[in-house]
Image 1 (cartoon, rainbow, N blue to C red):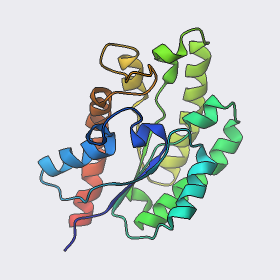
Image 2: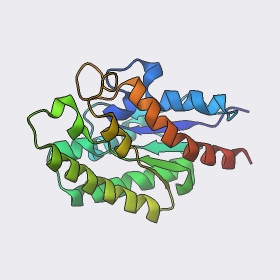
Image 3: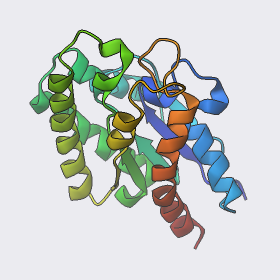
Length: 204
């Protein structure tokens, strides 16, 4: 019997821009799950730096993904915010992605949505309106959270962890924007309980 399949959908935060493969949070999460005695296959990651919701959707089409994943994660939206796209558009496209993730896993309860981190606290945001960025991120996250809970999927809020990490030494990669493996490890602490709950249901 093969181990349960894990699909991670997203953008730079999921592909782990600037960190080695083992530093990506889906990979770290897999290691932690196995350490806790929960079998799971290596994550299939469909994510690229810069993707918006519609670009992720198009990439999913191109990847010809098929149902059968035991566990799907979704983290998307920062590039919608960065490009100044509307919350209305985001809500519609996010919901479509969430529904697709539920189809791929066979059950909306096997989808874990991870909140958008706040890049306004990073060194990259120096000279920008950090408070406005934070408000935008909160607005996008509120939409994603509401849709996630309405679908009975699982919501993990890593935004406070991203704000706490800020631009602290070791918490960002060299570009001053993207999280380091150390920051991703803090995210994994929050994602792990939800992932465990999903996979323990699968193993029953």
